[in-house]
Image 1: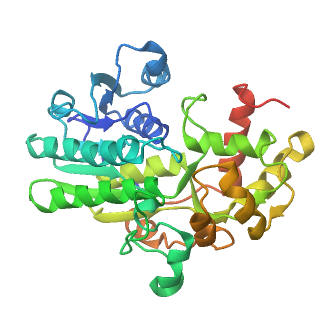
Image 2: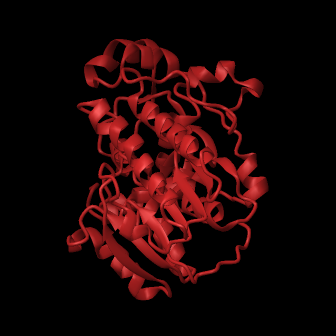
Length: 355
Protein backbone atom coordinates (compact mmCIF):
# COMPACT_ATOMS: atom_id res chain seq x y z
CA UNK A 1 0.00 0.00 0.00
CA UNK A 2 1.18 3.51 -0.74
CA UNK A 3 2.64 5.54 2.13
CA UNK A 4 -0.02 7.83 3.59
CA UNK A 5 0.48 11.12 5.40
CA UNK A 6 -1.61 11.03 8.58
CA UNK A 7 -2.92 14.04 10.45
CA UNK A 8 -3.60 12.42 13.81
CA UNK A 9 -4.86 15.57 15.51
CA UNK A 10 -8.54 14.75 14.99
CA UNK A 11 -9.99 11.51 16.37
CA UNK A 12 -11.61 8.93 14.07
CA UNK A 13 -14.74 6.87 14.65
CA UNK A 14 -14.96 3.12 14.05
CA UNK A 15 -18.43 1.59 14.37
CA UNK A 16 -18.67 -2.06 15.42
CA UNK A 17 -15.08 -1.73 16.64
CA UNK A 18 -14.80 -5.23 18.11
CA UNK A 19 -15.67 -6.88 14.79
CA UNK A 20 -13.37 -9.09 12.72
CA UNK A 21 -12.37 -6.45 10.14
CA UNK A 22 -12.85 -3.51 12.48
CA UNK A 23 -10.37 -4.86 15.07
CA UNK A 24 -7.57 -4.95 12.50
CA UNK A 25 -8.56 -1.44 11.36
CA UNK A 26 -8.36 -0.24 14.97
CA UNK A 27 -4.87 -1.78 15.18
CA UNK A 28 -3.75 0.08 12.04
CA UNK A 29 -5.17 3.36 13.40
CA UNK A 30 -3.47 2.91 16.78
CA UNK A 31 -0.19 2.11 15.02
CA UNK A 32 -0.51 5.42 13.15
CA UNK A 33 -1.07 7.30 16.43
CA UNK A 34 -4.77 8.10 16.16
CA UNK A 35 -7.25 8.52 18.96
CA UNK A 36 -9.92 5.96 18.06
CA UNK A 37 -13.52 6.51 19.09
CA UNK A 38 -14.67 2.90 19.27
CA UNK A 39 -18.45 2.52 19.05
CA UNK A 40 -19.58 -0.78 20.61
CA UNK A 41 -22.84 -2.20 21.91
CA UNK A 42 -21.64 -2.69 25.47
CA UNK A 43 -18.57 -0.72 26.59
CA UNK A 44 -18.97 -2.13 30.12
CA UNK A 45 -18.18 -5.69 29.00
CA UNK A 46 -14.44 -6.26 29.68
CA UNK A 47 -14.35 -9.59 27.84
CA UNK A 48 -15.49 -7.92 24.61
CA UNK A 49 -12.90 -5.15 24.90
CA UNK A 50 -9.83 -6.96 26.20
CA UNK A 51 -8.25 -7.59 22.80
CA UNK A 52 -8.59 -3.94 21.76
CA UNK A 53 -7.33 -2.81 25.16
CA UNK A 54 -4.27 -5.02 24.72
CA UNK A 55 -3.55 -3.30 21.40
CA UNK A 56 -3.89 0.16 22.94
CA UNK A 57 -1.42 -0.73 25.70
CA UNK A 58 1.38 -1.45 23.23
CA UNK A 59 0.71 1.05 20.40
CA UNK A 60 1.14 4.84 20.19
CA UNK A 61 -2.52 5.72 19.65
CA UNK A 62 -5.27 5.55 22.24
CA UNK A 63 -8.84 4.32 22.33
CA UNK A 64 -12.06 5.66 23.82
CA UNK A 65 -15.25 3.60 23.97
CA UNK A 66 -18.79 4.78 23.26
CA UNK A 67 -22.04 2.88 23.57
CA UNK A 68 -23.98 2.80 20.30
CA UNK A 69 -26.82 0.83 18.72
CA UNK A 70 -27.26 0.47 14.96
CA UNK A 71 -31.03 0.79 15.18
CA UNK A 72 -31.14 3.77 17.56
CA UNK A 73 -31.41 7.19 15.92
CA UNK A 74 -28.77 9.59 17.26
CA UNK A 75 -26.88 6.77 18.92
CA UNK A 76 -23.56 7.78 17.33
CA UNK A 77 -23.74 11.50 18.13
CA UNK A 78 -21.36 11.46 21.09
CA UNK A 79 -18.92 9.02 19.48
CA UNK A 80 -18.73 11.07 16.26
CA UNK A 81 -18.17 14.41 17.96
CA UNK A 82 -14.92 15.99 16.71
CA UNK A 83 -14.10 13.14 14.32
CA UNK A 84 -12.77 13.95 10.86
CA UNK A 85 -13.11 10.43 9.42
CA UNK A 86 -15.86 7.91 10.15
CA UNK A 87 -15.36 4.21 9.40
CA UNK A 88 -18.74 2.48 9.36
CA UNK A 89 -17.94 -1.24 9.61
CA UNK A 90 -20.83 -2.44 11.79
CA UNK A 91 -23.24 -4.72 9.96
CA UNK A 92 -24.84 -8.11 10.60
CA UNK A 93 -23.27 -11.15 8.90
CA UNK A 94 -25.28 -14.34 9.11
CA UNK A 95 -25.99 -16.64 6.18
CA UNK A 96 -29.00 -18.38 7.76
CA UNK A 97 -31.12 -15.72 9.49
CA UNK A 98 -34.37 -16.67 11.22
CA UNK A 99 -36.01 -13.49 9.95
CA UNK A 100 -34.09 -11.89 7.03
CA UNK A 101 -36.00 -8.61 7.23
CA UNK A 102 -35.44 -8.18 10.96
CA UNK A 103 -32.02 -9.83 11.30
CA UNK A 104 -30.34 -8.49 8.14
CA UNK A 105 -32.20 -5.85 6.13
CA UNK A 106 -33.30 -3.52 8.93
CA UNK A 107 -29.98 -3.43 10.85
CA UNK A 108 -27.93 -2.97 7.66
CA UNK A 109 -30.11 -0.31 6.06
CA UNK A 110 -31.20 1.56 9.19
CA UNK A 111 -27.72 1.37 10.69
CA UNK A 112 -26.17 2.93 7.61
CA UNK A 113 -28.84 5.63 7.60
CA UNK A 114 -28.31 6.44 11.29
CA UNK A 115 -24.52 6.71 10.95
CA UNK A 116 -24.51 8.80 7.76
CA UNK A 117 -27.31 11.11 8.86
CA UNK A 118 -25.30 11.71 12.01
CA UNK A 119 -22.35 12.64 9.77
CA UNK A 120 -24.64 15.25 8.21
CA UNK A 121 -25.10 16.75 11.68
CA UNK A 122 -21.41 16.63 12.68
CA UNK A 123 -19.42 19.53 11.14
CA UNK A 124 -16.01 17.95 11.84
CA UNK A 125 -16.63 14.97 9.50
CA UNK A 126 -15.05 15.30 6.05
CA UNK A 127 -14.94 11.65 4.93
CA UNK A 128 -17.01 8.53 5.61
CA UNK A 129 -15.74 5.07 4.70
CA UNK A 130 -18.41 2.38 4.53
CA UNK A 131 -17.57 -1.32 4.66
CA UNK A 132 -19.81 -2.83 2.01
CA UNK A 133 -19.12 -6.12 0.22
CA UNK A 134 -18.69 -7.73 -3.16
CA UNK A 135 -22.17 -9.04 -2.30
CA UNK A 136 -23.44 -5.56 -3.25
CA UNK A 137 -21.77 -5.97 -6.66
CA UNK A 138 -23.14 -9.41 -7.54
CA UNK A 139 -25.58 -11.93 -6.09
CA UNK A 140 -24.78 -15.25 -7.78
CA UNK A 141 -21.87 -16.50 -9.85
CA UNK A 142 -24.31 -16.86 -12.73
CA UNK A 143 -24.51 -13.06 -12.81
CA UNK A 144 -21.04 -12.95 -14.37
CA UNK A 145 -22.52 -14.21 -17.64
CA UNK A 146 -24.04 -10.76 -18.13
CA UNK A 147 -21.01 -8.74 -17.06
CA UNK A 148 -18.98 -6.90 -19.68
CA UNK A 149 -15.50 -8.41 -19.96
CA UNK A 150 -16.43 -11.44 -17.84
CA UNK A 151 -15.16 -9.91 -14.56
CA UNK A 152 -16.97 -7.85 -11.94
CA UNK A 153 -15.97 -4.19 -11.60
CA UNK A 154 -17.01 -1.32 -9.35
CA UNK A 155 -19.61 -0.26 -11.93
CA UNK A 156 -21.63 -3.46 -11.36
CA UNK A 157 -24.49 -3.78 -8.89
CA UNK A 158 -26.26 -6.81 -7.47
CA UNK A 159 -29.67 -7.07 -9.15
CA UNK A 160 -30.37 -10.78 -8.56
CA UNK A 161 -30.70 -11.00 -4.76
CA UNK A 162 -33.92 -10.52 -2.80
CA UNK A 163 -35.46 -11.10 0.60
CA UNK A 164 -36.10 -14.74 -0.34
CA UNK A 165 -32.93 -15.39 -2.38
CA UNK A 166 -29.51 -14.47 -1.00
CA UNK A 167 -30.92 -12.12 1.70
CA UNK A 168 -27.48 -11.30 3.12
CA UNK A 169 -26.32 -10.07 -0.29
CA UNK A 170 -29.59 -8.17 -0.63
CA UNK A 171 -28.99 -6.45 2.72
CA UNK A 172 -25.49 -5.34 1.69
CA UNK A 173 -26.85 -3.99 -1.60
CA UNK A 174 -29.63 -1.98 0.05
CA UNK A 175 -27.27 -0.66 2.73
CA UNK A 176 -24.71 0.58 0.21
CA UNK A 177 -27.38 2.10 -2.00
CA UNK A 178 -28.70 3.93 1.06
CA UNK A 179 -25.19 5.24 1.76
CA UNK A 180 -24.79 6.64 -1.75
CA UNK A 181 -28.26 8.19 -1.65
CA UNK A 182 -27.43 10.10 1.55
CA UNK A 183 -23.93 11.06 0.38
CA UNK A 184 -25.16 12.48 -2.93
CA UNK A 185 -27.76 14.63 -1.16
CA UNK A 186 -25.02 16.70 0.53
CA UNK A 187 -21.65 18.19 -0.43
CA UNK A 188 -19.68 18.60 2.82
CA UNK A 189 -18.24 15.12 3.34
CA UNK A 190 -17.01 12.50 0.88
CA UNK A 191 -18.10 8.86 0.80
CA UNK A 192 -15.66 6.07 -0.07
CA UNK A 193 -16.79 2.43 -0.07
CA UNK A 194 -14.72 -0.72 0.44
CA UNK A 195 -16.18 -3.88 -1.17
CA UNK A 196 -14.34 -6.96 0.17
CA UNK A 197 -14.92 -10.50 -1.04
CA UNK A 198 -14.81 -13.41 1.48
CA UNK A 199 -12.55 -12.18 4.28
CA UNK A 200 -10.09 -14.72 5.70
CA UNK A 201 -7.01 -14.65 7.92
CA UNK A 202 -6.35 -14.57 11.67
CA UNK A 203 -8.42 -12.41 13.98
CA UNK A 204 -7.29 -9.96 16.65
CA UNK A 205 -9.76 -11.90 18.78
CA UNK A 206 -8.94 -15.61 18.28
CA UNK A 207 -12.47 -16.50 19.39
CA UNK A 208 -14.21 -14.23 16.89
CA UNK A 209 -17.69 -15.37 15.87
CA UNK A 210 -17.37 -14.33 12.23
CA UNK A 211 -18.91 -16.66 9.66
CA UNK A 212 -15.45 -16.83 8.08
CA UNK A 213 -14.12 -18.70 11.12
CA UNK A 214 -17.11 -21.05 11.11
CA UNK A 215 -16.50 -21.80 7.43
CA UNK A 216 -12.81 -22.63 7.82
CA UNK A 217 -13.53 -24.70 10.90
CA UNK A 218 -15.82 -26.91 8.81
CA UNK A 219 -12.92 -27.73 6.49
CA UNK A 220 -11.05 -29.31 9.39
CA UNK A 221 -13.65 -30.68 11.81
CA UNK A 222 -15.03 -33.41 9.56
CA UNK A 223 -18.12 -31.53 8.36
CA UNK A 224 -16.81 -31.64 4.79
CA UNK A 225 -14.96 -34.94 4.98
CA UNK A 226 -17.28 -36.51 2.37
CA UNK A 227 -16.41 -33.83 -0.13
CA UNK A 228 -16.45 -30.12 -0.85
CA UNK A 229 -18.88 -28.17 -2.99
CA UNK A 230 -17.41 -26.62 -6.16
CA UNK A 231 -18.27 -23.07 -5.17
CA UNK A 232 -16.25 -20.20 -6.61
CA UNK A 233 -15.74 -16.95 -4.71
CA UNK A 234 -13.25 -14.17 -4.14
CA UNK A 235 -10.99 -14.23 -1.09
CA UNK A 236 -9.00 -11.55 0.70
CA UNK A 237 -6.90 -11.32 3.86
CA UNK A 238 -8.47 -9.39 6.74
CA UNK A 239 -5.24 -7.39 7.18
CA UNK A 240 -5.37 -6.30 3.55
CA UNK A 241 -8.98 -5.21 4.05
CA UNK A 242 -7.85 -3.09 7.02
CA UNK A 243 -5.13 -1.54 4.84
CA UNK A 244 -7.74 -0.79 2.19
CA UNK A 245 -9.81 1.06 4.79
CA UNK A 246 -6.79 3.13 5.80
CA UNK A 247 -6.20 4.12 2.19
CA UNK A 248 -9.90 4.82 1.67
CA UNK A 249 -9.89 7.02 4.76
CA UNK A 250 -6.72 9.02 4.25
CA UNK A 251 -5.54 8.86 0.64
CA UNK A 252 -6.64 12.12 -1.07
CA UNK A 253 -7.07 10.20 -4.33
CA UNK A 254 -9.62 7.77 -2.90
CA UNK A 255 -13.05 8.06 -4.48
CA UNK A 256 -16.04 5.83 -5.20
CA UNK A 257 -16.09 2.07 -4.62
CA UNK A 258 -13.16 -0.34 -4.34
CA UNK A 259 -13.35 -4.08 -4.95
CA UNK A 260 -11.01 -5.48 -2.29
CA UNK A 261 -10.38 -9.07 -3.33
CA UNK A 262 -6.99 -10.70 -3.61
CA UNK A 263 -7.88 -13.91 -5.42
CA UNK A 264 -10.55 -15.56 -7.55
CA UNK A 265 -10.72 -18.83 -5.66
CA UNK A 266 -13.01 -21.74 -4.77
CA UNK A 267 -13.76 -24.18 -1.97
CA UNK A 268 -11.79 -26.99 -3.70
CA UNK A 269 -8.75 -24.68 -3.81
CA UNK A 270 -9.20 -23.92 -0.09
CA UNK A 271 -9.17 -27.66 0.64
CA UNK A 272 -6.05 -28.20 -1.49
CA UNK A 273 -4.17 -25.39 0.25
CA UNK A 274 -5.06 -26.70 3.71
CA UNK A 275 -4.11 -30.30 2.81
CA UNK A 276 -0.76 -29.13 1.45
CA UNK A 277 -0.03 -27.17 4.62
CA UNK A 278 -1.44 -29.45 7.36
CA UNK A 279 -1.29 -32.87 5.70
CA UNK A 280 -3.37 -35.75 7.05
CA UNK A 281 -3.74 -34.38 10.59
CA UNK A 282 -7.27 -33.18 9.83
CA UNK A 283 -10.11 -34.67 7.74
CA UNK A 284 -9.90 -32.16 4.92
CA UNK A 285 -12.15 -32.90 1.94
CA UNK A 286 -10.34 -34.80 -0.82
CA UNK A 287 -13.06 -34.91 -3.44
CA UNK A 288 -15.35 -32.40 -5.08
CA UNK A 289 -19.06 -33.22 -4.89
CA UNK A 290 -20.93 -33.41 -8.18
CA UNK A 291 -23.51 -30.72 -8.83
CA UNK A 292 -26.34 -33.24 -9.17
CA UNK A 293 -25.55 -34.68 -5.73
CA UNK A 294 -25.51 -31.21 -4.17
CA UNK A 295 -28.79 -30.52 -5.97
CA UNK A 296 -30.39 -33.54 -4.29
CA UNK A 297 -28.85 -33.34 -0.83
CA UNK A 298 -28.20 -29.59 -0.37
CA UNK A 299 -31.70 -28.43 0.60
CA UNK A 300 -31.86 -31.20 3.22
CA UNK A 301 -28.58 -30.11 4.78
CA UNK A 302 -29.42 -26.42 5.13
CA UNK A 303 -32.43 -24.20 4.50
CA UNK A 304 -30.10 -21.62 2.94
CA UNK A 305 -28.97 -24.06 0.23
CA UNK A 306 -31.92 -23.83 -2.15
CA UNK A 307 -31.99 -25.42 -5.59
CA UNK A 308 -32.02 -21.95 -7.12
CA UNK A 309 -28.84 -21.13 -5.19
CA UNK A 310 -27.20 -24.37 -6.31
CA UNK A 311 -28.16 -23.85 -9.96
CA UNK A 312 -26.80 -20.30 -10.01
CA UNK A 313 -23.56 -20.89 -8.09
CA UNK A 314 -22.22 -24.44 -7.92
CA UNK A 315 -19.69 -25.22 -10.66
CA UNK A 316 -19.58 -21.60 -11.81
CA UNK A 317 -16.40 -19.55 -11.30
CA UNK A 318 -16.07 -16.16 -9.63
CA UNK A 319 -14.00 -13.43 -11.24
CA UNK A 320 -13.52 -9.84 -10.09
CA UNK A 321 -11.22 -7.07 -11.30
CA UNK A 322 -9.35 -5.49 -8.37
CA UNK A 323 -7.18 -3.19 -10.51
CA UNK A 324 -8.89 0.07 -9.44
CA UNK A 325 -7.70 -0.31 -5.84
CA UNK A 326 -4.27 -1.51 -6.92
CA UNK A 327 -3.75 1.45 -9.26
CA UNK A 328 -5.39 4.24 -7.28
CA UNK A 329 -4.63 3.23 -3.68
CA UNK A 330 -1.58 1.01 -4.10
CA UNK A 331 -3.34 -1.97 -2.51
CA UNK A 332 -1.39 -5.22 -2.34
CA UNK A 333 -2.51 -8.70 -1.31
CA UNK A 334 -0.98 -11.43 0.83
CA UNK A 335 -0.81 -14.94 -0.65
CA UNK A 336 -4.03 -16.88 -0.13
CA UNK A 337 -1.96 -19.74 1.30
CA UNK A 338 -0.72 -17.40 4.06
CA UNK A 339 -4.22 -16.21 4.96
CA UNK A 340 -5.70 -19.71 5.20
CA UNK A 341 -2.74 -21.31 6.98
CA UNK A 342 -2.48 -18.59 9.63
CA UNK A 343 -6.24 -18.58 10.20
CA UNK A 344 -6.41 -22.38 10.50
CA UNK A 345 -3.39 -22.39 12.84
CA UNK A 346 -5.18 -19.85 15.02
CA UNK A 347 -8.19 -22.19 15.21
CA UNK A 348 -5.82 -24.92 16.44
CA UNK A 349 -3.94 -22.72 18.89
CA UNK A 350 -7.14 -21.33 20.41
CA UNK A 351 -8.55 -24.83 20.94
CA UNK A 352 -11.41 -24.39 18.48
CA UNK A 353 -9.98 -27.31 16.49
CA UNK A 354 -8.23 -30.37 17.85
CA UNK A 355 -6.34 -33.11 16.06
